Structures are given as structure tokens and as C-alpha cells.
Length: 392
Ligand code: NZQ
Ligand code: ZN
Image (tube, rainbow, N blue to C red):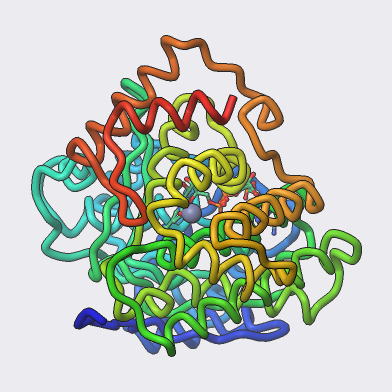
């Protein structure tokens, strides 16, 4: 067991109509001039944006709006947001949407609170000394960005997708109304469930330290999301299933399921970020397409965890030797992905990289992690390339 820091300063309000409390929460955290940041328009079409601006108008809180955060959010919009915030003297950010709007808002917050180019933080040249305070109204349970310290931005030049993590970027409040996720296309719901499970799996498949309490919570979270993803696949309007998944999404990436370990593996995410940067695929689908190949490449080096996963999460009962059990668990996970409409390889994901492009992704991935990374198994560039090839 490793020592750990667990820091979750986000006030979470979960329930029906909770978006109506937005003005009260902004006031509580000292916001007087707000940037409302959102995505490509789903919040306009659903009427949520109007509900929010009506609330702020009624409460006399002034605001400006900036939409356009696309999936795999772009640096150019972040620059635009920083300029707007400075011009309008914005002192509080409100992200309304999924992970892309939240991450873009966090990057804007770093850009306003720090001098110089905000990309420096995402290219690991320096660390942020602050961030504008942020509140979130979540419309997609997936990334956990509403409670996480991370944000992931894509620089158009070179299509470089990189994450930056800092406690300064953690949201002050997160409004979670499961009903707001009911307008999601089924594919995005499934992508979200995949991403949520992956955030815990990245922490679970490790060779470095564990606690029984953390493992038990992680397994419960994974079983719960798996069960409710299947419910939502058939019954997307099921409120309780939406709520289970939404809360699991926040818990999966706020640090809870990593307490006591070495920080986790994270290579499936790193490999996926290159796919997202180059082909603009949905993050959750990209993870599902890579995971099986990653798992088969690493499982022998982390057999105890793969066996435990097979039995405690995937419910494998006909155990053979440890390797057979581990492999059955991997197969069962891929069956689950297929059963909710997720891909299990790049072809099913809809991308068909050339050998040269696979090499490029492996190189960018290795560069991005400083050469090699992983805990279940440490991967270098050659290993990354092997996994990309196996996922074709
Ligand atoms: O842009 P709009 O029009 O809002 O539409 C979005 C988008 O097309 C739509 N959507 C969201 N809520 C909806 C809805 N459509 C109908 N009804 C609703 N209620 O869904 C699409 C995807 O939205 P997006 O925000 O891009 O998805 P997600 O939340 O999965 O975020 C993905 C981004 O987050 C990063 C990913 O890499 C990716 O760039 N991640 C961020 C993390 C973090 N900050 O901690 C961790 C993750 O591992 C991940 O890397
Ligand atoms: Zn993720």
C-alpha cells in the first residue's frame, strides 16, 4: 500500500431539476461575471442553456456565452475564450455540457489566471499557478472531468492531444441531473459507460500497491456501471440507471478508486489519445477499440489483477489456471463492449491506419509519456506499436 493524497473539493448536487440551483451556487462561490461555455449546440436544442441564462438573469448575475467546444476540444477556441474572459473581466467559468466543454473551460481558466501561452501546461513546459474558479452542469456521464483535476486539449497544428492535471482546475461545484443525459444518442451513452469503467480499470490494473477497501470499491463501481450500461442500452430513459452511471462517472475519476496504489497504468488512455488526436474518434469508443489488444499484451505481467478482475467483475466461475481465467475475463469484457454497441478493434471503430500512421501514433504516444509508461506492464514505443497493430 502506498501513501496517498485524496483531494475532492467539488460540491456535488445530484438530482432532478438541480440546474435550477445554478445562480445560488455561483453566488456561493463568489462569481459575479460569468463565462458560460458549452459545446456544439446540444444544450441550445435541449433548452438547458436558456434555462441557465434565465436563472442568471433572474438573479442579476451578468454573463457572456461561448459555444463551440467540439469533442476532442481545440486549442484555438481556448485562446478565443481567454481573450473574451480578459475583455469582459470574467471571474467565474460555468461549463454546461460534457467533458469537452468542461476541459475547454478549464484550459481557458488556466490561460486567464496565468501569463504566457496556455499550451505550455499541456506540453509540460511549466505548471499553472492558478485557474479561474469553475462550476459545471454536466450533460454526459463519461469523463469525470466534473470532479477530476484533468483537462485534455488538442492543438490543431500537428493534431497533438495532451492532458494537463492540476488541483487548481477542479470544479467548485458540479450539478448532476441524470435527466439531462436522457437526450444523448445511445452511442454516446455507451461511450460514456466505457470511459467511466476505464478510469477505474486504469487504476485497478497495476503492479504497484493496493488496498482491500480501494479494490472492493473499484470492483463494485465496475459491476454497477456494467449492469446499468446494459439497462440503458435497452431503456435509455431509466432514471435510476442514469443516476447510478452519473455518480459512478464522478467517483471513477476523482481519485477515489486509486487510493493506495502507484497511480495506475493509464496506457489505454495514452494510446487512445493519439487516435482521438489523429482521427477525431469518440474517446470512449477509442478506448474500447484498444483495450482488448492492450490487455492481451500485458496480462501475463499482471496476472493476479487480471484473474481477480475476471472473477470479481466479469463473474467468471469456470476457473481453469490463472492464465485461462484471465483470458476469459478479457473475452467477457469484449463481449460486454459488443453488447452495448462498442467496437473492439480499429476496424469496428471505423478507422484504418496505414503502417506509417501506426508508427506515427506510437512515436507520438511514446514522446508524450517521455519514452515509456505503464504499471501492469511498462510499454515502450515498440510495444505501443505492437498493440496498435494487434488492434487493427
Ligand atoms: O457538443 P454538443 O453539441 O454538446 O454535443 C455533444 C458531443 O457531440 C454530445 N452531448 C453531450 N451531452 C449531450 C449531448 N448530446 C445530446 N444530449 C446531451 N445531454 O455528445 C458528444 C460528445 O460530447 P463530449 O463532451 O465531447 O464527450 P465526453 O464527455 O466524452 O468528453 C470527451 C473529451 O474528454 C476527454 C476526452 O479525451 C475527450 O477529449 N477526457 C477528459 C478527461 C478529464 N478531463 O478528466 C478524462 C478522460 O479520460 C478524457 O480523456
Ligand atoms: Zn477517459
